[in-house]
Length: 198
Image 1 (cartoon, one colour):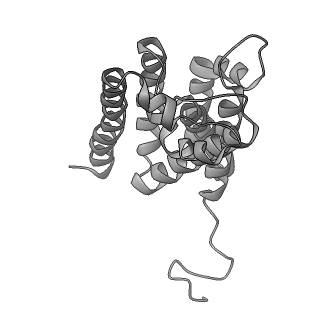
Image 2 (tube, rainbow, N blue to C red; image 1 turned 45 degrees about the vertical axis):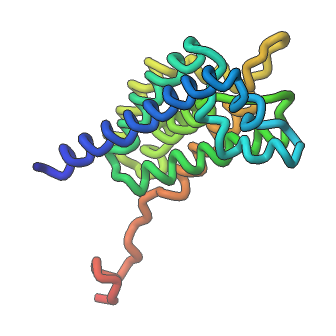
């Protein structure tokens, strides 16, 4: 099996597994009378709400909320995984942490959901091609922007909405940071691939 095919297969299993875990957690939360949401969501600026940074993306308030995050997470996560497991892990981890910490610091109320990670993966896939000067990645970014670009309105505050624009905004910043951290650096002039001078 070719490397790309192996990565595609591993990506489907990994991202599909993550989404499956979210659905299992959702069912468990229903059985527990919403206990997980109340105790493991992000409660801004409260020490007992800090564990929500880790758990909140796995929690959702309803089937519509979870379904709305599942499909883009599958698509964007799969595309990010095609670069390899390590790059995928950095993109997800950075988006997850930035979204959670930003929401904990600046959020307005109890926050749950994977949309911060979705926004982070979107931003990662949109910006990585420009850092890498890779025309294929830039082309993919253009297609993704046409399909999902309207979600970027979600980083702006909306009066009367219970959607966390903070999670979205900091997720985007996390995705951009992940793309920057993983940019391809040109080899120093005067060295071969082994790093020794030529």
